[in-house]
Amino acid sequence: MPTMPKLKLYNTLTRTKEDFVPLDPANVRMYVCGPTVYDYAHIGNARPMIVFDVLFRLLRHIYGENHVTYARNITDVDDKINTRAFERWSRKRPLLAEMRELTEGTVAQFNTDLKALNVLDPTHTPRATDFVVNGAEPMDMVRIIDKLVVRGVAYAAEGHVLFSPTEMDRLLGVPKYGALSKRNLDDMLAGARVDVAPYKRDPMDFVLWKPSNPETEPGWDSPWGFGRPGWHIECSAMAGALLGEQFDIHGGGIDLVFPHHENEIAQSCCAFGVDKLASVWMHNGFLQVEGRKMSKSDGNFVTIDELLTTTTFGGRDWPGPVLRLAMLKTHYRQPIDWTVRALEEAEATLYSWSRVGDQHLVGEPDEGVLEALQDDLNTALVFAKLHKLRDMAVEFPEVRPRFNASVALLGIKLRPLSDAAGEVGDLVGEIETLITARLDARRARNFAESDRIRDELAAMGIALKDGKDADGNPTTTWEVKR
Image 1 (tube, rainbow, N blue to C red):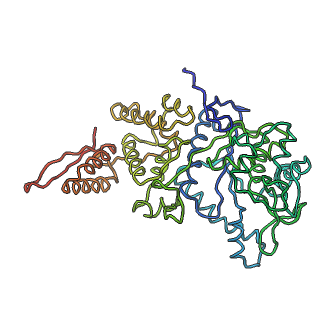
Image 2 (image 1 turned 90 degrees about the vertical axis):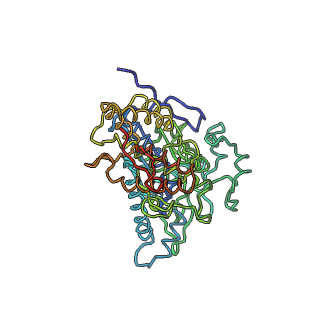
Image 3 (image 1 turned 120 degrees about the vertical axis):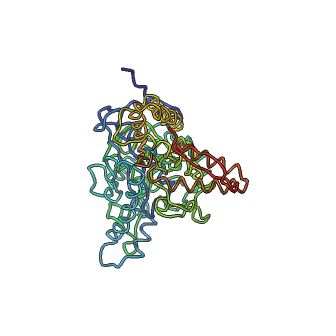
């Protein structure tokens, strides 16, 4: 039996691709920052969910389903959430209860979105509000903040508690803050938009706890007064409670490297007395839409739900497997441009693959596909191998179980294209629409568009035969390629 190649992952902390060596092979632990649920999740939020779902599947394949623990959090306390909760508060119940009800709807929609994208449920999906006080001993936020105050790296001021990076470096004896983002304190201060509030000892000190007005803001009782946690301390508490003081992989979007993940490392290492929080830090690249940064003001902000259920993007809705496949065609560390054309290409690929797809005919994944995935989730190479494997599976049915298992490892569901009429099922309407559009392009002598549609149909496994009718008008017939 051939030896399985080592899993290699790019570590943002070291800026190198490294052999992955788990702290405990019997319990591989991964934490990924999830959404802030003040609104429906946008397509950019979906990228880390899909990327780290593939890694979760791969880790379970390598180490066994019962030997991987995956925690992905929900941030359900945030100034935007607080404001919305107060706006709808009737004062007939605690404001915290109002905030919880407000976020239940967005959490439910997020879960519906992820199900459509075939994202597996993590082992744990902690909500931040459950870990502020009275959490898992000794891992709730208030206890961790208190530890940091006792150790001299945090201090109370005017109802706030702030963490001091300067005191952290003094405590550790070496400059540690900035190791992830590769910035020193002077660089951070020069390039950051920092709050220079008078209660801060240093502009780079960041908030662990802030006061709340009990009349207008949700909050919890604490040794420093009624208040609420800062953003960064939330993940330290949830990851520590569910995965331990140190674990294997921490993931999220590239925008979280600084300040969120940098501050998370600082808090956790100082509170727990450890030299590292996660062994490997992984970050997916930015997503833009049709060549521009996604923003509501530019009119190109699109939610996962809108892509799945409305005609907002490209004049039609898109199946979940198409969205997932389009997301994975680009390597996770590279920026991705989310375009209608990319979705059309992904759909054509999905149809092509579905010609040999059968969810009930699954064997072991292809070794070449596994090798590519274990090379820092090289999905671009995986796709190249799957295209070749698909062509083999058309000619040699015995290859189909291997092909199906390889696609399933990416979390992509293939819908069978078979019926009594001949292997196209409910795609007849789609095929006929494309052929009509191609005929229109030919009549208009737009041969570039005609060729593009022909290639799209070919990728779906459809062969065209052009001709002319009795009046000399162009005609096209089609058949499924064998």
